[in-house]
Amino acid sequence: MTTAVPITKRIFSGAQPTGQLHLGNYLGAVRSWVIAQAEYESYFCVVDLHALTMPQKPQELREAIRRTAALYLACGIDPKVSTIFIQSHVPAHTELTWLFNCIAPMNWLERMIQYKEKAIKLGEDVNIALFDYPVLQAADILLYQPHLVPVGEDQRQHLELTRDIARRFNDKFGNTLRIPEILIRQEGARVMSLQDGTSKMSKSDPSDLSRINLLDTPEAIRKKISKAKSDQILGLRFDANRPECYNLLNIYAILSGESRETIEAEFGEAGFGKFKPRLSEVIVEYLKPFQSRYAEVVGETGYLDTVLRDGSERASYVANQTLKEVREQMGLIPPISFSLEEGSVR
Ligand code: AQP
Image 1 (spheres, rainbow, N blue to C red):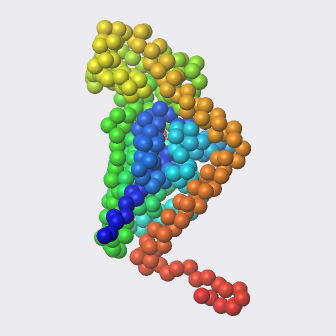
Image 2: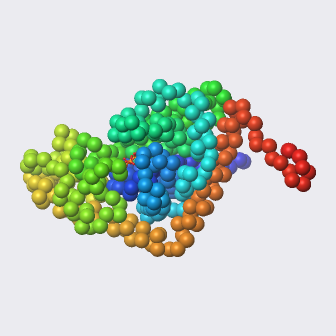
Image 3: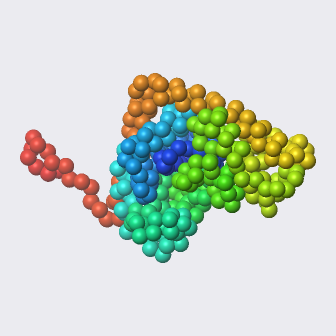
């Protein structure tokens, strides 16, 4: 009798160390990672090379890289079961990007909405790497041959491009790369700015009032919610035509775990004056365990470094296997090692 060997499925995802992780990053992405790690072999990356596509101050970037990794741990990513690492510590990411650059058509990248939006902000300062960002993202993902990539709604177009690059590679060079599925949870997939219910909550929004950072103090949270944009209509409803009201109710629903019906029954006749202080308290309570865990993680000397060193070793092992295969398929030859004892090349 043969016993079926369980197939371990893999996931990969990451976040940019641009500023501080916010509620949108957590509800749209990191929360799914925490759930998935029990079932999947998981790789979670701090994508520092992506952050460099926008202007960064070196010292702030260094701090943000470590803070992002520490926040992964504080949010519940368990380094005993998941691999946490820094993208630039695994050089295979940049090498595979070059190889994919050689097969990715320019016009695929010209369609990318995120590039167009960020390029407008940068004007003449727009760099080549910002244009190439989705190819680096494809390399990040495909190196780990994941079955699933959990992301927020804003990343759907980039993930479709990753799948197209993998298909194109497989068509040209043989079936090497797994085509990953995209996992976008309905709930929290698009948390909106507190200052504009039609744009997403974002780390790079110049106004800190637009977002709730995971490490915000209770005072900061109360201030941001009290200043959050609302409307003049009496009675609160999950009405898509009232984007600010919808967004605030939606955050409340996800964090409190209450149903939309219960919330509308409670606040259906009320105004924002009654609702906002309740929302603030729900957020403050929700973030408390993350913040105390974060303090523990950064307070333990050497712990984060150990996690990141082990993570980059484990990630490199998997990444280098894929890279080796891709190099061979594309016609490159393996590096020739030089033996000092024999004085010859092997
Ligand atoms: N507002 C959001 N709602 C739900 N999910 C979101 N994500 C980002 N914003 C929201 C998801 O978080 C993961 C990590 O995102 P990222 O750091 O790679 O970059 P991003 O998508 O560009 O997020 P930001 O906050 O807007 O960063 P900046 O301002 O630096 O560009 C992704 O899975 C993303 O979908």
